[in-house]
Image 1: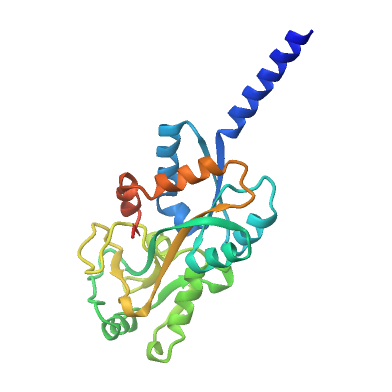
Image 2: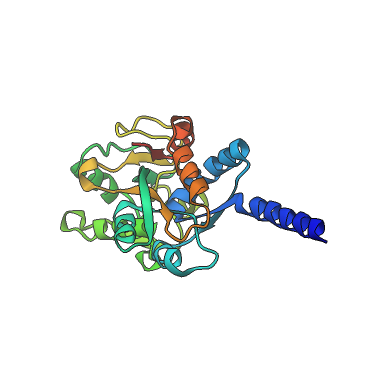
Length: 254
């Protein structure tokens, strides 16, 4: 009987170990749509540790990190929110992940405007029949940034139109006429010089002085049941080998 008990205990330990080889990552759409899935797949292939990704709104992520069950292991948020979460005891050991840029989009047959300065950007957007952007009522951070930009007095006269979802997909599905434009997150390779990217919808990044970007970070939840693999995942995500994946999805690594 004692041998059977020891064998059962060993089996339970083995099952427990197998279950531990999984981490939960909670992320906003800005990162989950910009290479996180590909990075997670590469990490799984290399380590055998399963990565489950849950996509949530940023405010929900902050709350769920503190209270949700099962607890997250890795948390991805903009730097300021991550700092707030860390200072309040919700996350630790956070690492800068990369920058997501908000850009200007157009119809594929429309010419690519020069938006290298704020004045040129305003002129280009004023020439549009409409400028789509994600409705700030959605709670999206990039939507709020776009909405505030269009409320600036120097942007007066631009025909902004809040929509459900992102601007680029709206243009791709045929919303708006040939002169329609949109503000939204860039999910393709790009650079500050706004050279041709191969995406006929993308005009390019907005001028740097507008600050229309989100700096993202990855942290370990203090409630994580597997901090070792959570840390390993973050180290892997910011490794030089993963830089190319992030770049193809529009995220600039620091």
